[in-house]
Length: 373
Ligand code: PLP
Ligand code: COI
Image (cartoon, rainbow, N blue to C red; front, side, top):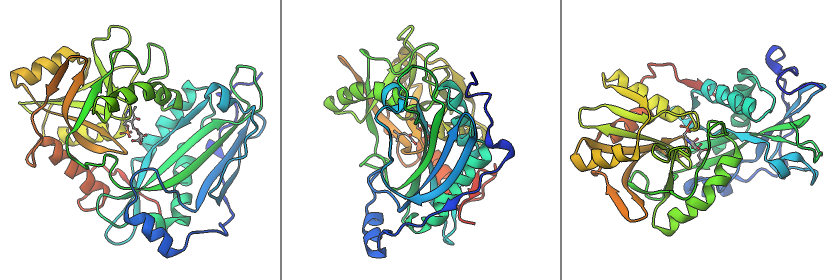
């Protein structure tokens, strides 16, 4: 039997996308109301991308179609065994009206790594980037102009085969939907409170923690509810083997800043390698700062804040960008981090990153890719 990793990929055959324009595209006035207060993940544009895959033909039937419900057989294996992966990446409006995205090749490669772990087929990075261009070109008017807003792109891949045996599906769909986005946290860059989960793990040794797959997020929902119940907006997970080392938040990476300017972030096989984190750390290195990717214990965080050695802590990810962590709470304790003021490294690196993303400053690493031309 052929496996998903040996079946043809589209690497040698760039896909051609058939366009079926929506007959129900929203009127300008209706769209403008949504763009004026987009929130996060509430509104969706008029179109979506769809590409089919099966073991015989590889990737085929690439299309841009009206946004709408998927027709799935109730036996589709994604509904039973969660064979699914996704990405998150933004399209940014520049002052001259053009639309750009940030390091799409890195997201494309991460989608490939997630696919490998979830026994899903590989989409070439070129086809991935082209799929982003396709959705943005048809729905360009949905890319907001206001500061700090963007069009959040959500590529995802699911097992669509109707089959209840437990094995990798022979039929898969890849889609891209798009949603105008403002701040992920209602407070913007105001420091957030984080809840330390001690009862639950997000991912285990040899598990799927490094993949961007729905199951990891499903596992985070109950501890996330605990976080809300304790007045926190995100949950922090420890490693599942020793429950000693910090890993990441439900949907963001974590970075600690020492008073000598060193940035320290957890390294582990079970966390998602964030592209925002990688970029922020690169910008820190460009400033001559030291970056350490290594195991970080909870005790290091606690003791570092108490002794004054750790002066800032922040979370970072595509949706939330960079947000200071004001406090870490757990059963019976609270660690209050110093407030990240306007002069903090956290907010300086955030500004540097967003200035590049929005085209306000040069792009020294060649991170931007134009999507609308
Ligand atoms: N960790 C998790 C679990 C995430 O969901 C995300 C968001 O995508 C990140 C980290 C940060 O990754 P990135 O910066 O690539 O968005
Ligand atoms: C992203 O930042 O793109 C994510 O996928 C995280 C999610 C919590 C929205």
